[in-house]
Image (cartoon, rainbow, N blue to C red; front, top):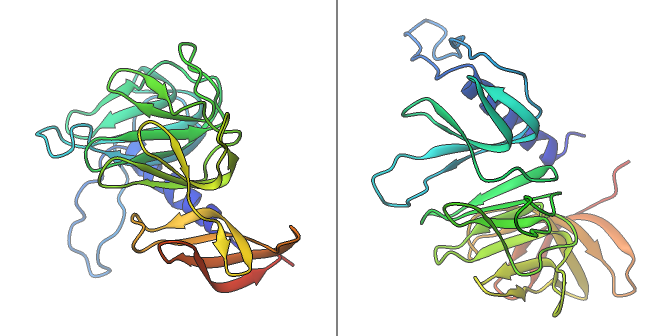
Length: 250
């Protein structure tokens, strides 16, 4: 069975492949309808790409959005060396390194409508700041979110007020500790409920970009800490309603 993570990774890989092959030319009308056409190609190495995300650095300002490209290693794009996190500007065709190189593999980028950019992954530092698997871009450098996480977030989104919601198998570093489902207010981590009736739910992948319409795929746990396998649940504002208990892979 193909997981949602795999499907998401495949879609991201195709999107970045199209990006690195040049901007797609408009398809001429044909009997078979719209189709992908070969790009012009770009010189450089073939990277191990993790994700691509559209990001508007100045929110509603005049600047056009760029693409944040995340890689598991250093790659060369049109003669520009990108160390794990870079941007590509479709308006100018310019590649740029984003921030100092991280010491671990980045995984997910979470963007807000007002220009916020957060990054999660297996990194702990950029050589300047201790980041511990979660960071925010302040316009010039990556900055920590509190003391960070024990493991990287797998799902997340940014609220309209700039607060960050994340999910995953993490615990925050330091005290007080929060786990699995949390909100960064800009100055501290706040625990969001993992309750799911008599059980608990540890969300991993999130579907939605608001707390008013949020679904998740995660693990259902009994009160004695036994796993009931994977489940799909919906956030009701204060806890999780389990919609389907998938169970275990066979």
